[in-house]
Image (tube, rainbow, N blue to C red):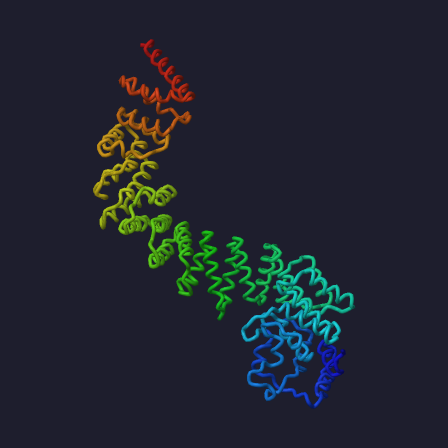
Amino acid sequence: MRGSRLIYDGLWRCLCPAVDGRALRRAVSSRAPGVVTTARTPSAIACTRLAQARHVTTSSASASIQNQMVTRDPAQQTKHEVPREERLLTPAPPSEETLRQASVEEIVAALVTMRDAQGWSFHGQDIDRHDRIIRLVRHLLSARDQTPSPFIYECMMDAMVDPQGSVKGIRKLLDDMASQNMKPTAAMCHSALAALTNHPDYALRQEILDTMQEFWFTIDTPARQSVVLGLLRDEQYELAYSRLTEMIEQGAHIAIWVFDIFVMVFGKLGFMDEMMSLLYRRKSLQGEDRAISSILYYALDVCSSAFHYPGTLFAWNSAVRSSLFQPADGIVENVLATAARHGDASLATEALDMMSRRTRVLAYHYEAVAEAFAASGDMTGAFRILCIMKKNGIRIVRGNTRVVSEALRRHPKLMSDAEAALRAVAHDEQLPVAMVGVVVEALAETQGSEAAMDLYRDVACLCGEHANSTMMQTLIINSPDEETTRALVKDYTAHIAEDDDPVRDSHVYGALVTRCAEAGELDLAFRFANQALVAMGGSNTRRLDWVKVLVAKAVEVEDGRIWGVVDELRKDEETGALVERLLRQMRMTKRASELKV
């Protein structure tokens, strides 16, 4: 049934901004004596407060409705009774009985309250805004015989902003308005743009922007924010970032939460540089914002995972060094790895110290810090970290020094610094053999074994034990003359048992056999040759240069051990053919030399 003339006129004036204010006041003042207008109770004000940050004007309808709201006298309410206007906004949906008892003004006021999803709450509790708006609008249109109006469409468009909305619903509302010859309002267009941030549709968004220009509606900062967020949701990342940076350059007052969304999305996608560009500006706008700690935590996580050094350092300095939060162990490990890769010894040391207070520090943690020192050129710091690792009960082996070896090969100028650093650290404590070995091997491989012999001779003094087999083999391979090779072979056979020989690849074995054979040290040459045959495992190989050298020397001194090697090589058909061809060439060469004599 149609409502009273007063209620109908009041609703009509609320929904039509063209109604003059004096007529509106006369309609309100001519109510029945039984209806008392009073100031709203504090609890109702807390429930229905509108967002002060909302920049979209709903064509003055909201203000008119608020001026017409009818509330009960507090004296007429019992102590525990919920105010009538609040009953429509409780977390539980209002029943049909509650809706029938509510006046049209109260229902409309509830709709006005829900116009901004971020601007109100029911005593801190959330409700299903999408369902509640549709429920109230349906009641107005069906049970109260209210005619559709721009305000009703605005409310329905606000409901489309919810994830439960859809592009189909947005377009249906616009088409319905057009079919009834209703012109779109500015609030309707702004709500549609906001809805399209959750339900992106590029063509529809452009239609709405064209409509706003046609009706001279202001495309203000909130509208532009909705556009860039819609582009972001539509996975047009470059265009969204370009539009956002354009707004920043124009000095637009962009909401902080917009920056937060871009930071989160770009971080997930791995766009670290763009993410950090926005995060720098976002942090400068933080003020009293509490969400910055969560954003910095996220930035530290994604940047350290991607080894993005500028982002990791910024987040660490902004949050961890300022005690804003304590990162998880996994994040600290990523920070440590990032610092190691980029040579930030200070950051790596801080991360290691934080981990040592929480859990047991493992070998790879120390190696990461040593890598950071080595990458920064501080060889003394790198060696001291390895010594600390040894003191904490972790045995230093060749693999632990890999990071130092890589740094020395990348920057050969550090060789002299590394040797000096070893001798300086040795004044305080004995060094692990592997730590000295990494410098000896680097010197031998880059400058020849002669350059490393002084440090090699001091190994026993620096470490309290003799050089290991790998170090000595590297020196033998890179030895420039036979005299040095024979001295090294003598040391090797004196200190390294055959069972202690490390397993090497065929290339290393070939180099060892060749060097030993050329120096006339056939005992060690055959020792390495037998190990090379085992390493080959019967697989085909064409790298048999060492066989030629070994055969030549063995034939020269008539060493019969060579036939055991040859017989082993003949077991493989292809390798055997190569050996036979090699032997024929050697016989022909020898015969030719004899004929010349």
